[in-house]
Amino acid sequence: MSSPPLLTAGALDGIRVLDFTGVIAGPYCARLMADLGAEVVKIEPPNGDLLRIASPRRKGKTPYFAQLNAGKESVSIDLKEPGAIELVLDLVEKADVAIQNFRPGVLANFGLGYEAMKARKPDIVYCNLSGYGQEGPAKSYSAYAPIVHASAGLDLSMISHQDDKNAPLNGSVPFADYLTGVHGTTAIMAALFRRERTGKGDEIDIAMADVIINIQAFELQESQHPLPVDRLTYRSLKAKDGRFVVTPLSGKNFRDLINAVGHPEWAEEMPLDGPDFSANWDKLLSAVEEWAADRTADEVEQIISAGGCPVAKHRSVLEALQTEQSIHRGNGIEMDDGGGSFIVPNTPLRMRESESRLKPTVATLGQGNESVLKNWLNMSADEITDLTQKGVLFKPKPRAKRA
Image (tube, rainbow, N blue to C red; front, side, top):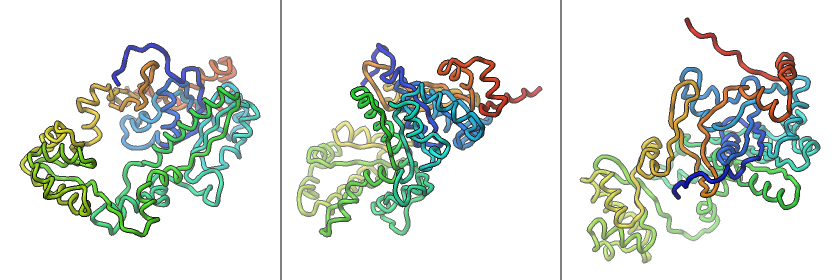
């Protein structure tokens, strides 16, 4: 869908979000809401989100943090200082949504759990994101994406599709984090919609492990049925200068493929509609790989794609962001966090009638202390200064410029 001229503000314009999260799942959940126009205030401790010191770094900044927290304000509050919790609850009264991904019970022990916030803002939508959920014997277990990938079956599901099945693959993209963030955003939207109809808020409980178990539909069902089942392996094939994947799943895909590569006889030699489906699938992929041996990966992609069968050259994520399709969709957004410029992908949430885009700004730690407290709570400069002097608010001192 191409982007028409902007007609209205974002779909979440006017919604205020307090983001108590760190690292990936929670920040991504809240950033998606910022992409849709919500006003998101990230509540950070004096040492900031752990991702602020993650690699890659240059000039004391990390674009990794910037990409996941674009478009947010930052208010730095030391929750251990007297008066800090009351300040946060004052902000809660002006908010619509609160998102947190501490271990279960941690934020509640500070007096900032759902019940405490609900007492101050009865229709608050409170979203919990955690490794294993808010209840149960594993609720207090510490978890990052690689831990959840192992405990929820994903690693062994992935290895079951490999030729070398001696050990799970090394750590990779933190799928559990990003998928949990998306599920959190989805549930928040549903709760906000319900609030419009009933006037009531809600508490949400999203567990990373639940999310990862849900995405393994084939593997879960395969494990419960003793009869052998045909399993397709979408293996990477070699071209002259790179690799590609092709998936002739339907009858039409199969016909489109064999016609595109100039081998219609394969329809009889290795049919995909009989009892030898799995064996013929492997033979077909090997035959396509042999055909591609003297062609570049670009040529393979162009020929097969033009014929109608799904195919893709293996690309790096940066290469993917620079394809004609990505350029057409305006996927590359330039940001500068003070450490230099870099490219991030635009939001995947596209709307026709309202603004939806990644906001290419990133707040320094505590940058929004004054503006947020003034706009949300009508605090005076003197009151904000007093809170800063008491240690409730934190804002790093600017680095001295070198002579």
